[in-house]
Image 1 (spheres, rainbow, N blue to C red):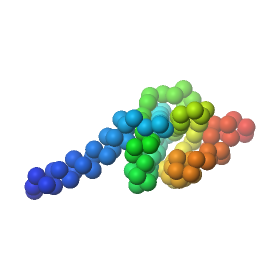
Image 2 (cartoon, one colour):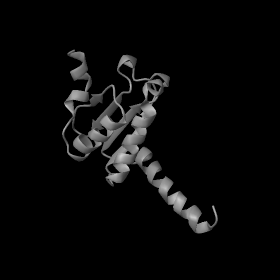
Image 3 (tube, rainbow, N blue to C red):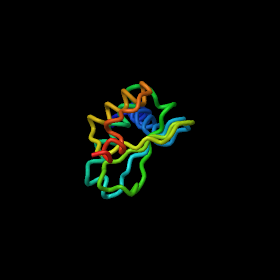
Image 4 (cartoon, rainbow, N blue to C red):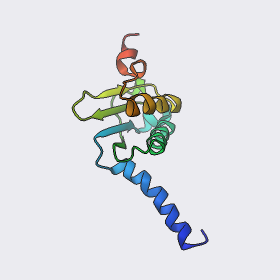
Length: 124
């Protein structure tokens, strides 16, 4: 860091991530980040959601948070999407590519990606 302006730029970039995680949004994306989730690959999934929401400029509409164990470790990484007035959607066995697809199709487009939901896996 060489100047106060550079420090201010870093602060502004990081502030966007804080807003994503702590905002007053109507849609909340909760990523299971207990040791089971992390071991299964939840860190890149969380990063994909944070980056996807930020890149789509949806910071004021979607809040990304993390939680401990959701209780279905065999399906990790697990992500739950809560939207006002709608039933919770539980996505399972995710990776960064699937998370990016969920951002595009569900969070931006409003269409649940059914093949990644727990209901699709329980049928098998």
